[in-house]
Image (cartoon, rainbow, N blue to C red; front, top):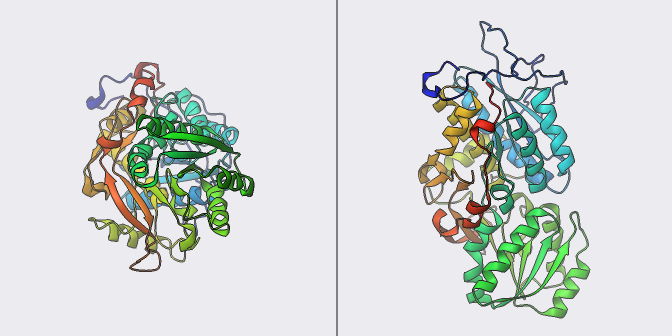
Length: 443
């Protein structure tokens, strides 16, 4: 490493940097090719310098099938818009950016295989993606093994910045604990103290419901039951019948993707959308877009909305519509926003470091602070260097019954500061690997 700004970084920082084929990134309708695989990659091999700088390759580890396919497509488009913005001005530190996408299938085992292939065969310099927290955890374990910086764009289990944190992983969405802090107390005041938890039966669902339960009980409420919902459930009739029998004041759901779409539609069919009260910890835009007003019931959390009256929002929406005309989802949502922001801040960190050295980029990301105006949120955001989770504004929303236009379907009720919703439990649980134990490389 010759950059004097990083003299404290070990000298053996060369790495995996020749692409035997140029792959990809066709943006148009959100479809991306995949380069043929070549290998094996030899760790810390010093490639000869060439007159022309090689592209910086980003690996997009995002679902295109499974429970979170719709959200995976949206976050991929967000990443591609950030990449295009950098390429339009000449790339990053003089290098054009290329993207490789592989479908992680909403399956942890596939996430592991994809991460391994992208790092060792496609020689991706950095990884971005994941909605499903089990997939994100699987990717991050592989990434840590190689020292590959990984931006977890949209996975929301508290474990991602808690017990499953890693030095190379940075978490960009609010997690279940953050949203519970933002929603539960107010909901108890308005709707009652007897709560039932409806929980997707995997790590995000479990950890989110655990956080919700703790806040309910700490504030004098009672969890009368918890119903575990297997992933990819499409028939919720047995669960809804039990809810009718128990008669809780509030149903708190930690259900996502195609599962929450099916749940919402069936709640409406049984005319249960008004009573009991419904709280959805976090509502991703692709999971409600196009469902219709009756299905967007209850109160839910988000970290961004396309009609926030803030600087830059209208321009961001216009850029989405210009780059991706004719999309079924006509305006960007929170998942797209997270994919864009994570990619943009990764590339900015490379620029500030003046290098693709992974340890230098990690240090830049750990010190990251983003003004509210630049984040298009109400409050300044910052990376927690202890947990590697982005601390940011969170919003409470409900259906907007007086929309300004067709896609104005959220009514923003309140916004909470990063400090109000911080997941303090994660700070004590997260044990990041030392930089000295993290393999170093030059992407």
